[in-house]
Image (cartoon, rainbow, N blue to C red; front, top):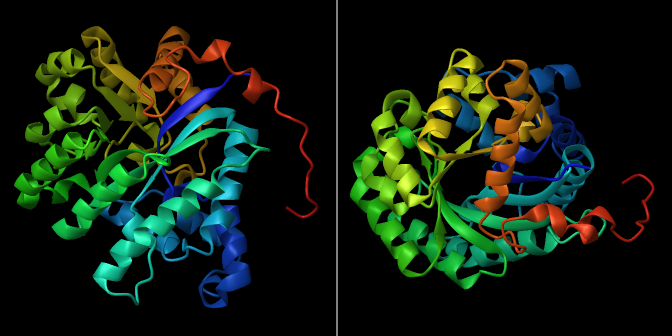
Length: 346
């Protein structure tokens, strides 16, 4: 049984279409009525979009139903699928906690409620029958004010039992007008000894070299080897890892052909820059991590030895993997969990 590490998966985008459809059938008849049947909903939910911004609008559909009360429902099904179908040993879930708080509260009260969200996600992720090591990455967001984003960093610092890093999300083309603000926020996070990653160099409009020195990993980063390969030696020197999510770039219209990623992998391997292969939004894509691997092999983008190198890099760069850099020899507890009881109708 191969075991994998997933470093870039969004909590909102992780809900597979069938699970989301069943939830809406039980709780949101108005939304269900917009679709003729499940097949039409799945096509709407998973079809490619023209731009990253259009694609990100789908997150709001899921964020609106991921609340304090419902998060355990979604997380249980997420981890069950990740364990049974993907053989994950390690999973970092990223999300913006503020966007799971109650919209009828004031900003101050929503900031306070974020701590409850983090605790709910943390406790719901501890499932003995699906023993995946999990941790949370809290995402600042380009649509949120400075005060909320700084509070997200403070929460990460106060919640290291559950949180391993901070990120910035919301579409990398929107960072430019607040670039000094993002630098200050990342400086603040590093001053609190918080790990950092960030959605950067995903699109041609989201390339900000000023932010690179503040990141320990780079969310996506594919435009660096494609358009700015001269930056790769600095990435290698800093030991930064790219979190490459192949299907995303087709779903968002960022790349016209997945085979363009061959140059990304080749240039990174040549420069000594690690890549972790990730799913980003496995639910929105209806594509799980092993299929991301298979797709890259099928299109001759990477070789089997290169795949193994990327799989090893994922464990090596995992922010909260507790067993060091060599996972293969220490997974007896995960490989041989205690017998589980299956609840009828779960």
